[in-house]
Length: 139
Image (tube, rainbow, N blue to C red; front, top):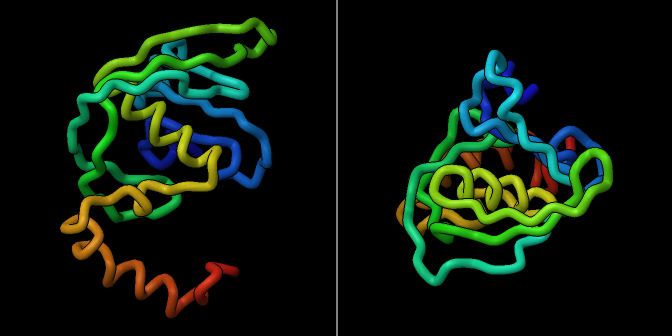
């Protein structure tokens, strides 16, 4: 799903799996599959005070995008596929990807974090989705 939709990350809840698991590949290239990072039960233990704003999109909301403010760097603790505890510091693009996927694990999506202008820009598309699928988004 991630590569088929030109994505760089995917969290288990996005595909109906109620687990705290995520995978991402900062290159978004299936040929660079060795760059995939898989994390189980991740948690952010420290955020930078500095932040930046960049455009994000999401596989859960196709053909939409908007500016989101995120920490420039984060420190993370998680487990790998073998259950080994890992600690990492992510910066820049990789920090942004991690934070985006991590939000899915906490029931948040990028539209919850859009800047005010970003939200105004995509609100008509969100209204269309509500008209089509209802307030709760049920199919």
